[in-house]
Length: 336
Image (cartoon, rainbow, N blue to C red; front, side):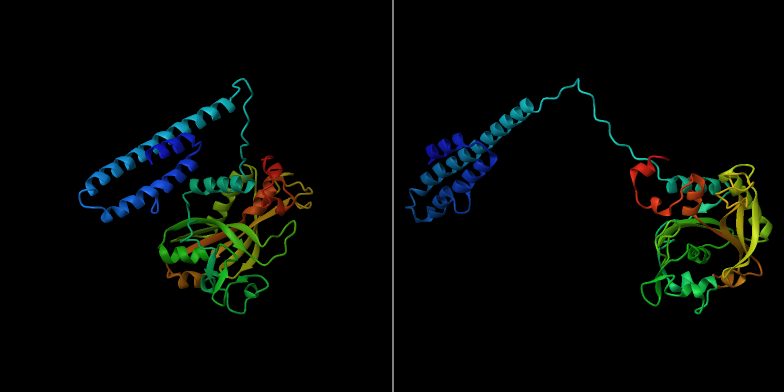
């Protein structure tokens, strides 16, 4: 058997063939294993002799297999090295390097501006969930059951009590419940609405919410913060204009315009000849919202604002189709 094993191992050309030899002799039903199993049938005086010879053979087979495998692997390595020659004089292959997405660049710039004004950022999944309770998305924001924005045509409902958030405003309430004044935060995140996909609409888009709550906060503070933000983002000569509006969770409320950064307020195609571009909505936090969040509206006041990140990026970089922001086409992204 030893002679037979040696002959078979010498003819093996791969680790797989060596494994078959191991199983043939040392496997559960191997030839040598069967001999060892039959030791009990031998006369007592023969068992030590046969046992010693069998153990020596087993050691020989195991050592021979290890040595043969090492030799085969070495030969394979040398063969690969001889076949896979590298010409060090050939020019290298340039790796394709990604570019910063315009949404990412715009968001980072906005974050830096508000961080410089003492705001903190709330963007963790625990503090800013995208799958939201109806209570936080609507009721706690002073939006009653019969409000038009609750229509299933506008919002994605998972069930009667759970919805894909239609705005980042629910984080206002979550923040006020978790943290008592003074509060100064911005909340960037994805939001969802049942819109048809076209050049200016998408069922998934991005918002940035802002919230300040403290004693003696006024509309003047809101105008000062947003004016400083606009000048930093769009240029030092940028002016802001507040137009009266309505939001259920702020009172008074306003739409905020900035002078067109393309024409400097003179009127052009970008601003439809008006000299102004709407960029966000804002207002003083409604007393009912403060009260539902556990903050006394007789002691504290605050302001909130919300802007569409996609819209600001499109205006800032002259992008005329919102769909380009979501297609991840490198030909588009490489332009920024």
